[in-house]
Amino acid sequence: MRTRDLHTMAETFDLLIKNAVVVNQDGEGERDIAVKDGRIAALGGSIDASLAGEVIDARGLHVLPGVIDTQVHFREPGATHKEDLESGSRAAVMGGVTAVFEMPNTNPLTTSAERLAEKVALGRHRMHCDFAFWVGGTRANVDDIPELERLPGAAGIKVFMGSSTGDLLVEDDAGVAAILSKTRRRAAFHSEDEFRLRDRQGERIPGDAASHPVWRDAEAALMCTKRLVRIAHETGARIHVLHISTADEMDFLKDHKDVASCEVTPHHLTLSDEDYATLGTKLQMNPPVRSKAHREGIWKGLQQGVADIFGSDHAPHTLEEKAKEYPASPSGMTGVQTLVPIMLDHVSKGRLTLARFVDMTSAGPARLFGIAMKGRIAVGYDADFTVVDLKRTETITDGWIASKCAWTPYDGKSVTGWPVGTIVRGRRVMWENELVTPSNGEPVLFGEALPR
Image (tube, rainbow, N blue to C red; front, side, top):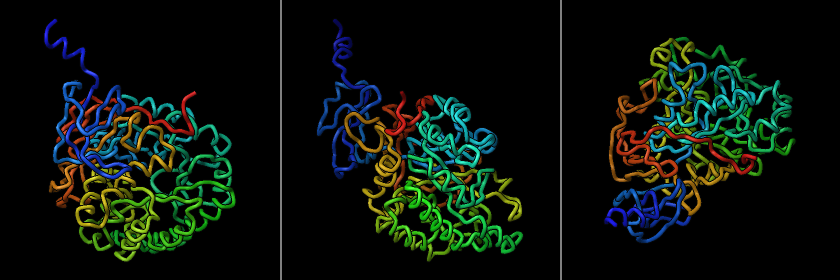
């Protein structure tokens, strides 16, 4: 028998990552990771390289559990001129993200079993990362919620209490209570008080995007979050408050962790209302980027452990759409590709520990939403890894952005900490800023919604 035949027979693993600093729930240290059939098969100090079909020498690099971004808008179906599931997921893996939860405010809306199944079919083996889809909660589908939130590929129920992009809106207490009385999984909310937003529309100044946070003020966010928490207590439901934008909400939510988890975004942690002067409508988001005082309050909530996870709220629009005069300009910016480098830059500056970053991008999402076999580096789990170089300094540019809209509010920003590789279920999808494997995305599995 030839030497090559003997070697092939001896192979035990599909992939071996050697000499990496592995960051996990038990701390960080140098160890090897072996992968077989898309799952982690062994962890050890020194695994024989001859036992693997592919070997990655990750000396000098850190291997993190795959980053999970639980709030993205990939616009398909309905607005694929600015993003679709393929392009959005390509941006995700280029930025080190291994799984995403995509939002329901598409056209048509994702509010039925049929629409959800269509999106799952559109994503399977076309998206570059794994995926799940939020299902929109409405007055019309409230009786179907117990079934909808447990369907294959469903991340749970998402409700808009304040108007944003799309046609999903349940602004009144009775409508929210009806939905939460039916949910059994954690439901996600866009929390801005629609009644206050309507009353304050006159605060918008045509041509001045800096008036956006004046119109959609901090009180609109706090009022709605207080209402939402009260309804959650009354219905015995679990809620997740998306994209916290105020110091006041952070201070309020610390006393309601029994029912409420919350998300913070890189843009609310990095930018401030002073940036409207240079970014204009590119900074326009719902809820808005606010003052430095609010930004510092969000950081305090993060550092005190009130914030549970990071989400990008990736919400792309074309430059032509963004160039419309405010308030005709749409709200939203890219973010899925820049989540990892922006937050690793905060790690490099000492505002965030690497362990906390890992908790908020992998273990945290898995814990909150009951994700099966993702969120940590452990034998039996999916071999999802975000490989980073913590010492590498790069400049984020519009040209690097893989989203169809091809721009970022961080164009020209230098960061330290960079995604070198994205590995999804043992397949090296991105390496050194290049896609290296065909798309093979699959629906994320959930413990509360396993296939039957």
